Amino acid sequence: MGSQSPPSLPPVYIVSAVRTPIGQFQGSLASQSAIQLGSHTIKSAIERVPSLKPQDVEEIFYGNVLSASLGQNPARQCAINAGLGESTICTTVNKVCASGTKSIILAAQTIMTGNASCVVAGGTESMSNVPHYLPTLRKGSKYGNDTLVDGLLKDGLTDAYSHQHMGLQAEECASDHSIPREDQDAYAIRSIQKAQHATKTGLFAKEIAPVEIPGPKGKPATVVSEDEKPSIPLNEEKLRGMRPAFITDGSGTVTAPNASPLSDGAAAVVLVSESFLKANDLKPVAKILGWADAAQKPSKFTTAPALAIPKALDHAGVRTEDVSAFEINEAFSVVALANLKLLGLSEEKVNLHGGAVALGHPLGCSGARIVVSLLGVLREKGGKVGCVGICNGGGGASALVVENLQ
Image (cartoon, rainbow, N blue to C red):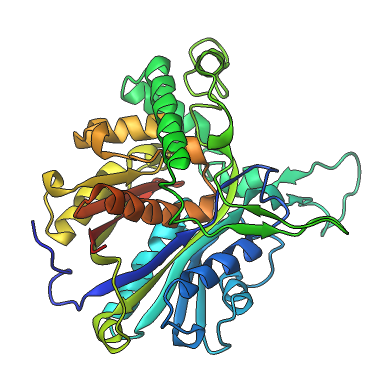
């Protein structure tokens, strides 16, 4: 195993990593926009490094997928609202579900190439606040009824090529890799149980930046400090008895509870160069070792992590057996199961605090959330090297490898 950065490139360190709690669709965080969630997380990530000042941040890469009605450049709005200076360079990244991971990769590359010394990266999404569209309005509706288009479904959950719901491509994955409904339900139950355990024992506490929700007029504010879904008691019998959501002829295997739920949340990490780290006497959380992206047929997006993860490990000079923990985003239970199968990984090393099936999947946030959660797993387990992989609509995936320095 090597612990060096990609050949001839200078090292990059993560010095802070935080996330909001994950709120359910129309749930605990629904009153907060994606901009509010993102700015809160960026501000919190910076505040966790006492010697770091907002003006030290030179650039931001921030993921956001469902940007309709948010206004220009959501990343820029998040930065300004977090108190960063007007000279901060800001780029919004949309690589669908992999946006957050790709933002971290772009931040590392920016530092490695000498264009900045301190960069914040992450992602935000409020699926609860995505608007509906009226596509015919601008040209005028001449006759008959109009149809509202759900922006969440159109731009977040529908394959742009086949125009199928992503859930049908999860069914395709289940068929391709012979993964029955029973295995998917059992995996979902294990993911929820792990997340509930992590919540009850405080394993998530260090990575979560609680969100204060203003109260109604005359009433006090409330503080959301825990992920919402794990607080709901698990009913295994009900989960196993749910009807398939996408194929209803009796052959379907993907259900609402064995898929990731619609959610709201944000995550952010602060990355710095080695010279900035030393000059400011910062304590590193992790070191970037390598990364990769991969792509294949759009309908096979579910297994693209099985292509990206080996590329990232090779880029990092790390063997699979030397990885202490993996985070593979659970867009659906079948996604995790298929990639485990293709990569030959043991579930004992994957998503140890639960995954998106248990927590939720705020699209622009999730790629960063899994990095934050991986660092939490490595800290709690004393692991040395970790790897994340996340699929994205259109057939792609991104992966990142880090060395734990906590």
